[in-house]
Length: 464
Image (tube, rainbow, N blue to C red; front, side):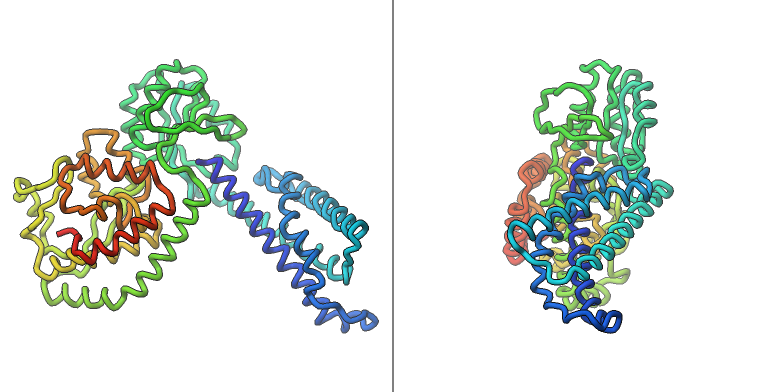
């Protein structure tokens, strides 16, 4: 959620500041050790760095907390340099008082006050430079719109205008309002269509003048779509979505989410996805070269197959695979429609005549999926998640609840894949497994699915 993401960003900033403080203290000791005798020959030899560890153990973890307490990380866009200096000076005074108290009451000694003073100067400069860099990044995001999260705002017309006008710059830099829906005048179907068209990540209800029954109907539409609903109304009963409170622009919000919330676990998942994809790409390079050579020798045409697939919230992206079908295979789909073995919008034939012999081996061993590691590296896919469907198949989904599988990143492997995907021909069963994964997601579940994928591939349960 947006508020939790801001909280995570704050914690990352505090960790960065802690690292800067540790580096500045070390660098101050280094400068005093190397250049001190040349600048001031009468200075005594400086003690080793380990005698400063107790100062570092106090300064590094607690200074960012004191800075947060003094508001150093708040209202970044409108804050003046003078205010930043005042807040920084206040925090340094508090930390100085703390260190002084430790020296007096615990008899801890600061071996070199010159190192501490130099570290304070370096740290102050580093923190102000980091803040200046963040301000510049914020201004660029406001100017270019880069990196914004797509949202839809819904409610009465006068509430929508007020909401957009009163949004703080820091919030506005994070959001791209892709559509505004007046749910007092437009049917909920327009809101659903806007979610499909914009691939929005959430719907924000500015609903001060909207009847609660209308909001409830709109929230239920968001719930079945797997899109978060943020409202300033009372709690509504929902079947799947879990309500939590969050803050947006200083307002208390009720959030109905039917997908995993923004958390350190999700951030760690994204890091593991990218590192894992990079490592697997390097390890799989010889296999990829063999696959490319085999495709070249077996079938005329390109080595890779690219297709527009539906990503998170239906956002299209180009998915890569090693080509396993003859050229022009997509054009023959209509004539093979009668052989489709899957129910619903998905097209699947066990013994597809469009697949050439080497391509069938690529599919059986799942080697054809290896190029999708590039999609994982780009952040379009995850190692574990619902398999991405072609955009044209997503458009044929009739039940809105089945679109909730789009509420998370698609993945290389999933529950459907490790439970014997060739044995499941009912699209509703497939979706049920995807929703089971979404509703019970954890890092441990991802790890189990990845471990189960290995024997599934070795048994040849790849797509045929």
